[in-house]
Each structure stands twice: as structure tokens, then as C-alpha cells.
Amino acid sequence: MGRAFVYVILGGGVAAGYAALEFARRGVAHGELCIISEESVPPYERPALSKGFLLPEDPARLPSFHTCVGANEEKLTPKWYRDHGIELVLGTRVKSADVNRKTLITAVGETISYKILIIATGARALKIEEFGVRGSDAENVCYLRNLADANRLVSVMQSCNGGNAVVIGGGYIGMECAAALVTNRIKVTMVFPEAHCMARLFTPKIADFYEDYYESKGVNFIKGTVLTSFENDSEGKVTAVILKDGTRVPTQMVVIGIGIRANTSLFEDQLTVEKGGIKVNGRMQTSNNSVYAVGDVAAFPVKLFGGDIRRLEHVDSARKTARHAVDAIMAPEKTGDLDYLPFFYSRVFTLSWQFYGENKGEVLQYGDFSSGRFGAYWIDKGRIVGAFLEGGSREEYEAIAKAVKLKVAVKDTAEVERQGLEFALKV
Ligand code: FAD
Ligand code: NAD
Ligand code: ISD
Image 1: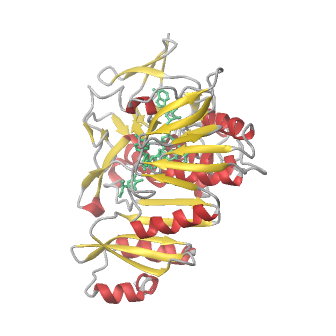
Image 2: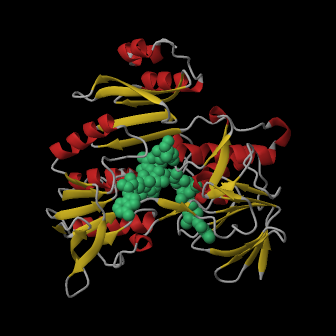
Image 3: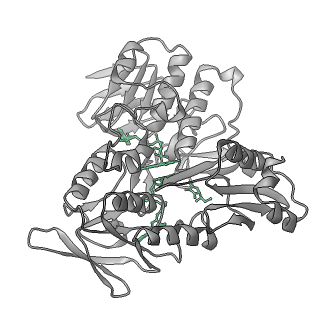
């Protein structure tokens, strides 16, 4: 039993959706392209799952957030794929791959062969069991990576209205889910090992602003410790979490966001792996010429950082690496190396921030941290390499992005700190 395609995209997430749109624009013929996804729905904008999807009123539901609406492009519905002759093999897990034979074998034993493969398998949520804690399979403990997780989270949240939740992890999932829980009238305690939230990116001063804001919404922070065990009732539901410092926090539900691992396992012994991802060149091509990797699973050279290999876990990078791979496949002579400016953002409550570049070197912080109009520049070797802004307008975000892209030279750090956002606006 088998099928053969010219192009196969393995994985049906954000990167797959943007790759499909680019293939269609470049005139892929009917029957040439196939997307294989473990998920039961066509590609969608995953960021919606921790934002619009969790709203108590008028929540976002599919088909409203299929890719590529997040970049103000066409919405690729099942009909769109049919109309473009793109085969969707959904609800199907690929369990093995052979890059020499150019074949994939699905969980039901079908062999799907390709001429060119794009790996877009994304990542999986780390389980608390991987840190030695048992019991996260209880019905009121939630992770959040895919639509099935999000549906489950909504149903647990609805059964907990007016109650308490513990959020484990102070990263993106922790912060966005804590805000969503509060909006759903659930009282939240956040637990994480670091001294402040969003430790990978925020400075202590930036984190203070968000923590104060969350506290004003009733969120309680327990920092510098980790979960060691769950307490359960006779039905197996978690009723409290026990922390390493001995604290016991009674709760009706738990949300866990403790990071991810890229889904590289099918290829680890066949392709070069670096920084936890599949290593690609500037055209998103792996160590095998017929195989490309994009999105969360790809570790690619970032020109702006002197060609350093980075694996980024953000939607903008998934969209742009996917498009670039398709350009490199369909128009090789016209496609050079990707020149990517790393871009991260988040939206919680009425707050909204953007970050460009990398948070390396000396940091200069400016603005009014009490009113929520502030930002920061990171200066390395006399140049701006990173910029953060809370509450900016489109023009202001474009200005900080430009300052990073151009790696603007800084002669007088005190003057840049004094000028703040004006410095970027004058670039
Ligand atoms: P994914 O979108 O994860 O897609 C991978 C796909 O591959 C999935 O469909 C998966 O089922 C499938 N797959 C994996 N292995 C197999 C297999 N063996 N067989 C078949 N199918 C397989 N980023 C931002 O920049 N801003 C945000 O606000 C933001 N919010 C987020 C909110 C949530 C809840 C989550 C989980 C992530 C968020 N992100 C955000 C990150 C962003 O969504 C990811 O960077 C992006 O989805 C990566 O795209 P991808 O296509 O590489 O992987
Ligand atoms: P993360 O890497 O952002 O944060 C992980 C957090 O887990 C750390 O901040 C730390 O506080 C905590 N942690 C680590 N080990 C722990 C332990 N043993 N016990 C308790 N806490 C521990 O990862 P995440 O928040 O799980 O997000 C998952 C993925 O989803 C990431 O790729 C992220 O980029 C993506 N995401 C992005 C956005 C966005 O860009 N706005 C929003 C949601 C999710
Ligand atoms: O993917 C990411 C992410 O979420 C960050 O904060 O890369 C960065 C680095 O970990 C910090 O620059």
C-alpha cells in the first residue's frame, strides 16, 4: 500500500500552512503536494490557542483561525486545499522515515514517498514526568500545544469557574494561560523556579512590571521553587500541589507550561542535529539535499547574528522559514540565504509587547514603567542587537525592528537611554 508525491510536508502546523500557500502561489500542480499531520484539522494559527480560544465570551473557533489569517493572508480551509489539488492526510502519525529511500511510513502502515520532503514537525510540550514528578495524566491537569489540548483546557476551566488554578512555569504558556484563567474568573497561583517571570527574555525590571500587573489582577506568584508532587482525591483528580520548599497549594486545576522539545526523533540518526533541532543551511536544506526543515524543528543560521545557528520557537519564524524553503525548492536560482530578524511577541489582558533581535550584552531601559509605556535596547559591541517595547504603535514597533536590523551604532549609551524610543524613531 503506498502513495507517491513530488513534495511532502511532514507536519500540519503553522509552517505547513504557510508552505502550502507559497507552493500554491508558485503554481504547484494538482496532486504534487501532500501534507501529513497527526492533527485532525488542517493547519491553523497555533498562537490563537492561548489567546482568542480561551476567551470566556465569543471565543475563537475553527475555521476562523486556519492559516494564513495570522499574517493577513488567505484562510486555507479544507475547500482551499481541495481546490488547489493539495492532499491532506490528517489524523495520521508518521512513525518512521527513510531519507535514503525517500519514504515515510504512517502509523497505519502506509508508505508515502516523496522527491522533496519538508520536515515541519514542530515540537511537543515537555511533561512534568520528565522532571521526576508523577501524575500529570489526571483529568484536571492540562498542557497546551494543540487543538485537542485547548479543547480539554476549556472544558476543565469551565468546570472550575470561580475556583482556583495553579500554573506551573513562568514562560509564554504560563503567562498567557494565567491571564486567560483570570479572565475566566479563576484565581491563579503561578509557580516557577526562576527569580522572575519570562526569565529567558525579560530583565528583572521588565518582569517586575508584568508581575505587578498580574498581582493587581489577583495572581499570586511563588518563585524560586518547583513542583515535587500532586495530591489527589479518590477519583484521581488533583486537589493540591506540593512544592520543593514544602508549600502545599490547594487547587481545582493545574496548567503546565515548562518548555518544549523539537520533534526531531524520526531523523536524529539520519540528519545533522544541532541546538535541539534539525540543522539546515540558509535555504532551509538539511544535511540531505532532498530534505528541508522549517519552523520550531529547524536550527538555521541567523545572518544578523553572524550566521550563528539558532532554533527559534515562534510563529513569525515558522511562517518565514516555511516560505523560504518553498522559494528555495521552487525557484532555486532566485533564492539566496534567508536573512531573518528574530521577532517574538505576546498579548495578555490589555498589554502587548514586541521584541526583535537577541537579548545579549548591556541593557538600556527607558520610559515609564508605572504607566506601561516602556522599552529596552540591548547593546553588544557598541551596536543595538535587541529591542523590546510594551504598548507600542505599528510605527514604533517598525522603528525598533529597523534599529535592530541595521544594528545601529551606539556611541553614548546614556544619551540613548535618555532618548528612549525617540532614538529608534530617528533611525
Ligand atoms: P507546529 O505548529 O507545532 O506544527 C507541527 C505539526 O506537526 C503538528 O500539527 C503536529 O501534530 C505535526 N506532527 C509532529 N510530528 C508528527 C508526525 N510524526 N506525524 C505527523 N504529524 C506530526 N509564537 C509566537 O510567536 N507568538 C505567539 O503568540 C505564540 N503563541 C503560542 C501559543 C501556544 C498555545 C503555542 C503552543 C505556541 C505558540 N507560539 C507562539 C509558538 C508557535 O505557535 C510555534 O512557533 C509554531 O506553531 C511553530 O510552527 P511549526 O509548524 O514549526 O510547528
Ligand atoms: P518557555 O520556554 O517559554 O517557558 C518554560 C518555563 O518553564 C520557564 O520559564 C520556567 O519557568 C519553567 N520551568 C522549567 N522547568 C521547570 C520545572 N521543572 N518546574 C516548573 N517550571 C519549570 O516554554 P512554555 O511557556 O512552555 O512555552 C512552550 C512553547 O510555546 C515555547 O516554544 C513558546 O515559544 C511557545 N509559545 C509562545 C508564545 C508567544 O510567543 N507569545 C505563547 C505561548 C507559547
Ligand atoms: O525562541 C526563543 C525565545 O522564546 C526566546 O526568548 O529564543 C529566545 C531566546 O531564548 C532568548 O533570546
